[in-house]
Length: 359
Image 1: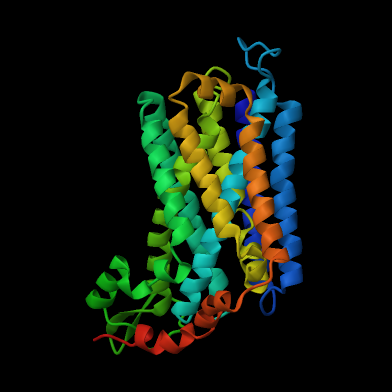
Image 2 (image 1 turned 90 degrees about the horizontal axis):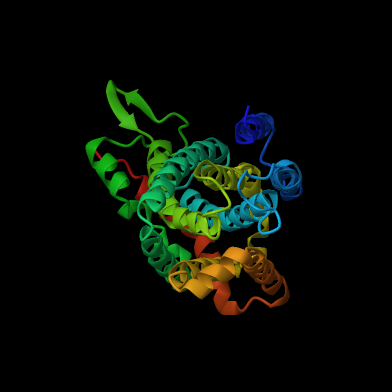
């Protein structure tokens, strides 16, 4: 059995175990998770992910034909995994902020949020895996695609840095939301758990169904934004060091590990959102850096530099995330920055309009 096959088995086992435990904890706990408890669970999932990356460094064998004096396979695997994990985790945190706003806008009760969040995360995992496989295959076949991905990342970085979160989230303007609400009558009970049921012999869709549609379509947009980033991180400098299957393995595992434990993180973020006020800026800089680097690799000297110094990318990614959190903690919140928080608190006032049944 090849090393990559063994690692696939280990990864799948860890993922299924973590996901089942995370689901069980959120389903069988009375009330919602406290911030303290949620942070403990989040710390556990992050530790498991990092240990998986460390195992690559110590146990992944050297690829035949690659001079260990020039490039050590296990070191490259470790650096790529950690860089990819941090990039995708930061994007996942930003995505959770959007989920929180969607739940608030659409009046989702605390009881229904974990159930819908699980489904949203599952959709996200499936979409990311499909997009990664397709994207990596395109890069293998058409090397110039990497420059298109670079441009996509530059645009995403600009959009993330200069677009307010509340401007990005408007469930009633979502195409799937509008189509479904016109096609079917909506159940007047906004807190119904099931997606479709009959009222007086007529099928009605529930608010939960509409929320799932919005989450699913939002996941598609997130996948389009994040996949070029992970491809840029993994593909850099690995052409003659890692095999195509190893690149796919790193891209998929770092991505899926990044969304593991998001249910616990969701409850933690609801209580510590102010600690991540500048995360958006940090993530947008990371995307800008990766996108610019993908374009600049057209210059041979730049390509050689990043290929032989993969730690540079990891340092920039880690440094950007740490600085964004440090600035969020140290810099006092200005009054005009409270506007968004006030808007979120008042979002429920709009629920009657959103949840109104349409015959």
